[in-house]
Every structure is written in structure tokens, then in C-alpha cells.
Image 1 (tube, rainbow, N blue to C red):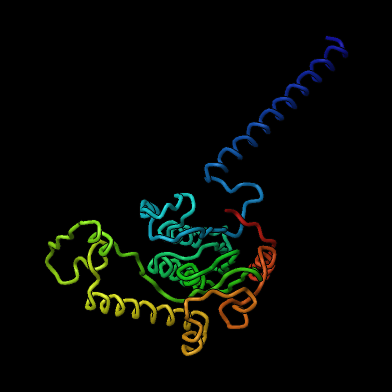
Image 2 (tube, one colour):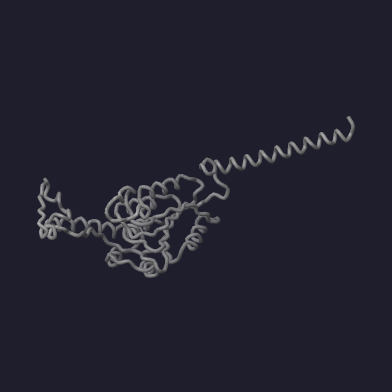
Length: 276
């Protein structure tokens, strides 16, 4: 075998192994990204801050929204899902902080309390970022975060409780309809819009509302380190703009997402990469 043939054979083998190596590299890269999508391996440039959204009406669970409010199922949040996301982030070693983005006028008090508790029990830095609205139960949820930021033109607070409703009893009577009360237990029909609201039932409702109202004030006072008397003075059911909320101690900072990222960067001491 002459020299030229030997060189050609070696060259062909070299090209073959280089090509094989390139194919293997491409295959491994594709495999890596496939596994990343399945969350088996961390993706390249994976996030270190978990972003969680609290938007629309707040319920304890999502299917609860099948009522007559006309609220789209896409415009609600559930404490069941949000608390599960918080707990999952707490167990993920790659996640260094949690950002709760809030844009909600509130909802069920228990739902707000559950999210508040989940944030308070987080071992990682937590920030609540209020965009347009952070009211009532949504504000209560936000107070569980270690730091609250709200936009200057946002609505914040709305500390109060309500269960007002429209009664149909008089209208039904005028229309010739009769309400037949068939129940055991004095207050079993209380709150039924077709039943008359008795003074005793109204007193019972106001008792329960007062308990929820006092609890709301207590939670805000404890979480925001504010005097109870000050929170009580603010608890008139009115929301306030971001700067006013900061002046009254309801939030820590006026700003938006870039301010939240800057704050979190100081907390985790590295660049912030949020995944939603």
C-alpha cells in the first residue's frame, strides 16, 4: 500500500469520527433540552426566583367560581393553587426567592389568609408586587410577604369585610310569589335573598362580620408591625394609592417589576431570573 492510500484512509477515518462526534453532540443537546422541558434536568439559564400570579377574584379553589357573578374562569385565582406553588418553590433548591404578583380586588377571606400563611412560613425571601389592585383579601395575602411593592397609581388596602346582597322578598310578594319557610334551625334560611331578613339574622351576620373584621385588622397589624389603633383607623373599606399606602405603612416601597428585581438581587446576591 502506497503512502497516498494510507493518508486517504486515515483522512477518511478522521472525517468519519469528527462527523460521528458532531452527531453525538447534537443528539445530547437535543436530549438535554427535552429532559429540561420535562423538568428532569435544569434548563440552561434556569430561573432562581419563582413568580406566582394572584389575579382576578380570589377563591379557595378554582371550581368555586362556577357561580352567577359572570366572572371568567380565566380571571380568578385560588389559594389552593397558589399555596401549592409556594410550597413547591420552598422545596426546590434552585429557587432562591418567591415573587407574588398581585392584581386583584380580593375575594374570600380564608383564601387570603391561606396565601398569607404560606408566604409567612416560607424560608426564602418573599416579595409581593401589587400592580393595579391589591385590595381586601388580596391585600391580606400580600401582607404575608417580607417586602411589599406597589405601583404609584395602584389601589392598596380596602381593609374591611362585606356580605351585602340584594333581597327579592318584597319584589316576589308584589309579584304574587310566596316564600314557604321549611327549615329546622332559626338561621338556616338567613341570607336567602328570597327570604325576609329578620333583625335577629341581621344581628347574627353583623356579629360574624365584626369577628372577621377584627381578625383582618389583627393580621395586618402583626404582619406590617403597625399599631392596632392605626390599622383600625385605616380599616374603613377604602383603598389608597401606592404612595399613600407607603406613608401609612401598608407597603414598603413604591415601584414595579424592576424595583422588585433589584430588591431580590440584593437578597439572593446574584442576578435575578424569574420563571412564571
